[in-house]
Image (cartoon, rainbow, N blue to C red):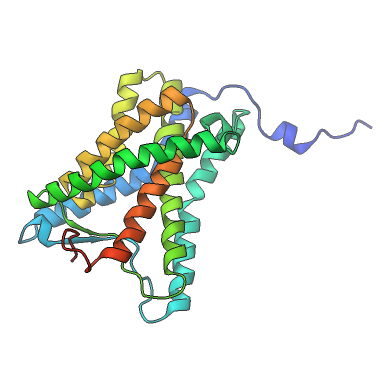
Length: 266
């Protein structure tokens, strides 16, 4: 009697998926993650611009309490939200596995930790300073809502959760919007320029809830990140940069809000 072949070897044929499958996989990942966020942000933006008063008099709150006055339940909801937001990245890994690839194909691994950290820190230093200036200018001109980067209670888990939230944002956005999307669009025959525009507009779209400034600023950041990804072939440095930017924004807001005059608060 012939022995059965191993299930892992037979489960994922490594022939190239058809264009139809690639297109459906791309839409599925986006529909479960940042594509849906883009639609949600657009609806939120329409609500903001049609509301009486200027955009800068309205607030967009990130990292809000999920159960005010109940810190342990709040913590459970925060961790649940972070964990479930990462599921589309696991779906990307699954789809890559079907091709005989992995997240390493996108440069999301630990093979080059120090170059990734160094490059990421340099990117964050440049974009962070210009990003703050752009946000303040856009808000001052009435193009942006006041961004409240965190509104968590003063409990022991506040800063760990803010850091985990920043890491989650970075992993989801860079793996999906840069690594996976550019790979899939290339496989579907999109030109490099068109794929760059699509990735950058998508990044801007799910920040539209912040206002026109949030859309344009993040779209510009998307152009830079796509160019760097194509140069280095790795999303690792981009994940590091994005993590540092969000940690600085979330933790910095928690430490400085109401204590410095230049930082707008709701």
